[in-house]
Image 1 (tube, rainbow, N blue to C red):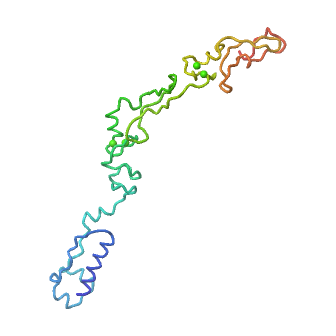
Image 2: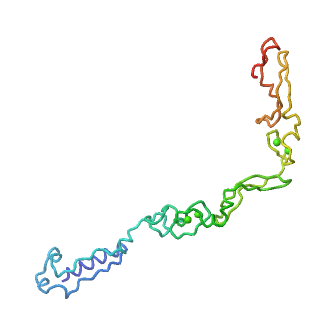
Image 3: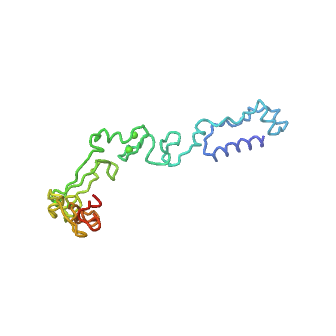
Length: 226
Ligand SMILES: [Ca+2]
Ligand SMILES: [Ca+2]
Ligand SMILES: [Ca+2]
Ligand SMILES: [Ca+2]
């Protein structure tokens, strides 16, 4: 009798160790025939006895405890569409973050519903003197609203760069009216012609004829580089 009770207690102890609440029907003394007790059967004999209640298989709840939840968000890997991101799980709040937080197969659907016509569209941020930068409407840093990702800019000194730095509506030619006009460079007694353009390296204009080389000894020879 003592052996049987020890066995039952052992099973219950193992169940608790594994975090399961087994619905174990303990061996009832009455369920064991008196002959079994009197014969002091071995454990194997008891298991083979029809009068002994075999330890039942763990119930489904117990198997459910044996789950994987890598991101500890309470959703098992089987149902978590990203088990490595704790803000992504079924039923999660749908943040504006380009992720499908609630695992419904749609990304930022509530934000698309509210601002779908704006998200991804061009936006303009305007600073002093009408200086502006273009950007795109999208989720902001809080992930709970949308914003234009462009930053306003202020007027800057005009640089020969194909850009209206001082925001006066004139690009480069306000500082260098020669831009786009013809120019000449003398080399080897020849006059080489070109056009004033912006030098992207220096931010200053230069005559493209500077890059040409006159044919040695004659100005009547075709210009090399044309
Ligand atoms: Ca989202
Ligand atoms: Ca979603
Ligand atoms: Ca410029
Ligand atoms: Ca300008």
